[in-house]
Length: 505
Ligand SMILES: C[S@@+](CC[C@H](N)C(=O)[O-])C[C@H]1O[C@@H](n2cnc3c(N)ncnc32)[C@H](O)[C@@H]1O
Image 1 (cartoon, helix red, strand yellow):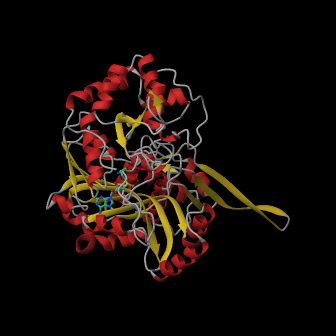
Image 2 (spheres, protein in one colour):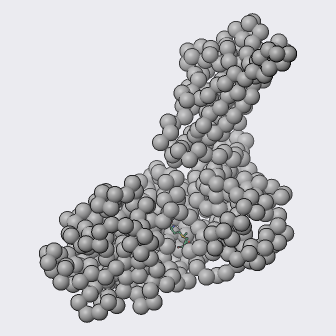
Image 3 (cartoon, protein in one colour):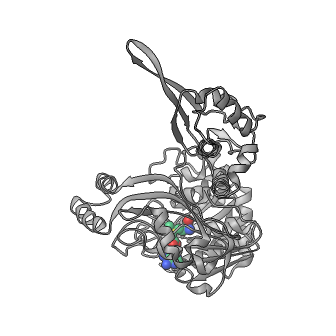
């Protein structure tokens, strides 16, 4: 199907915006109407959403047409007094005759409110609109911006300061359009022309002018250009097939992710940040974070690397999950296992990657921290600051003067073991459930020491008192004690002034 929308009808864009506004076709409007916690929880009628099939008003009508991809009677549009607004929709190419027959209208593309924008993308089998093949996906179908994967991508999207921003693998342009609000200029690149056309339409519909949308292979259309923020939600599904450009990432899923990382030394400006939401692999010769370093090549030492998984799957679990869900047959899983094992793949890591280019000379960070499900994007900024600060050669000395406090919600459990018929203290188990869950097992006397961290007493004093009272073993050096406190702080048990961990969201 050719690109269905019209880019040469600027006067109709205002009409569509007006229609969306008067019918309350907004995230809040749609979620309230359908009882959804978030627009990302939307399901079409065909995908099983329950509820009335009535078209009671303009909001129902737009949901039915553009989100469910179902036909409506042209006469209903008139009855609801929406003919004027729908003329703009028609002029933009969004509306056409529905296969149900004369008198029925349907959508030529999806349209939905998300991230305070109106976004259009291709029809699909769950929302076929006026397509003649039941909404079958095409090789270059434009990925919808309200899937779960898009939710994950958008939820960690860094907020740009003023600067140059690049969204690689931009699809509808959702990332670039959301980032355009705070940026000087935003560039969006996609390898399918269809995506760039949809993104162009979306930019115009939302009145976003500081964006350049380019058709091409990753950095290729950008030449030597550098950016302060590069974001990417690339295809990463392991697949040998070249069936869907938005999905297939080669045998190990890393075909595109890897090339994006390899291009960072040329395209990420000093002090810049790269963010991707994707899946990649741990291998028998190196975990993902070390492999990212190797992709960065000769200039790797200029970069800090952070891997923040939300899910980690052993290769065998990934493949058996694929068989159970029907994504692959048993034989296919077996042949993939052989090939992936030959490549050294041990596990798939799904989550957020951050790479920052250091503006000043200092040791490079290589970090992997598992994030608790309830922890929001704010904790990523904390993590970056913390990991950089703790590598500073003067940090230990600075910690001695700090006045830490125990973090709300940390769990301390004194453990006893019965010996000779008596419960004897065995040690102190210390745990924090978030934002980066951690667990420690320490000498029982550490409980007394930790109680001295009241937010007012400097570490140096606690060390002195702890040594005096023999809560700290006699040979312990100050640096060792500080090392323990740094570990407890990074684990979210202690909070150092200036490094307060954002509350769970
Ligand atoms: C999973 S979709 C993500 C789209 C959008 N960023 C989002 O989050 O909704 C991946 C996108 O990458 C694009 N893509 C795949 N290979 C590419 C390449 N080599 N260069 C640029 N874009 C590519 C696809 O066309 C598709 O639009």
